[in-house]
Image (cartoon, rainbow, N blue to C red; front, side, top):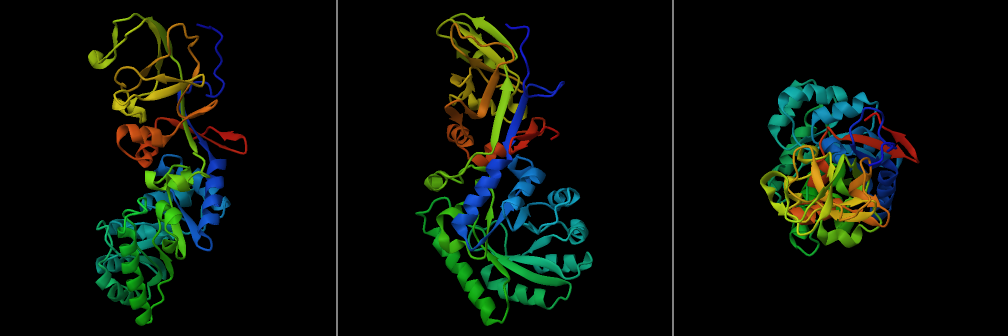
Length: 389
């Protein structure tokens, strides 16, 4: 092992595991999506700390790339953006607890409503010409008002001077499966609601239905704006729309450094449960990142790999809370401090969130959102690195 190994990325005292977030990739992706959906506007979804990428940094990059607004899940997420000086429109995507609505009003967010109770609560919270978007449930059955109640709710909004109907929207359940006819049925139901609003003399404001998959695969769903989440981060929304994501660039890489190297003899077993036995003499590298950091414990069972010096190497043994082990091969010249890529590119090789998702029976969203907060995020843009995250 080399005593003079240099740590070329991490500041002194920082652990040997980190995530790199390429904000230029976010800018690129938003530009690609804007071109694809024009003349509809793109609003970037930055909930869940920007899908694990850093909400404030991603929001700024998306807005710089021409996004017309932002979307979050929680009032607290909107508060963080406002505290960072971001004054763009922010849509909170679902109704919020009544005791948080005073903050929503103070922050000047756009509130989602789908019940008379939320309208009452917003008025009680001090709303004054507070913008709201009416959400209609066209078949996903998560949240939203029934289509037959939409006109009455819109009329109730219009009767309240404290509130302004700024938009009407719905959410698509299977947009990532373009052949499924259910998306067309949802859009037809939404069209009916919009027609009924028009017949009642109600201006719906901004009409929107499309998530990332809807924006890419269903031109009819684009309407006035699209709510783009996972595609802005360069991760495909589903296998059914993979062919529409080729211009997108993944924004996140997950890296670490080798912390220990040891030879292991044939027949030895490794990690908790001793569930992996070595068929041949080999060399094992320990990497100081584990399931507490968002690397799933069972990634080993599904033949997960990492890149070491641009070589694919298998994870061996159960991933532990803070560490995992990698078979780097007999005679390999791997040393303490060498870089390991868990997600991202090294040389000509790349491991994508979608690769983990396919192995684990999940989706790329869960992979990137699952990288925990104890993994430092290093944001870069045009070659400038901000490692304060």
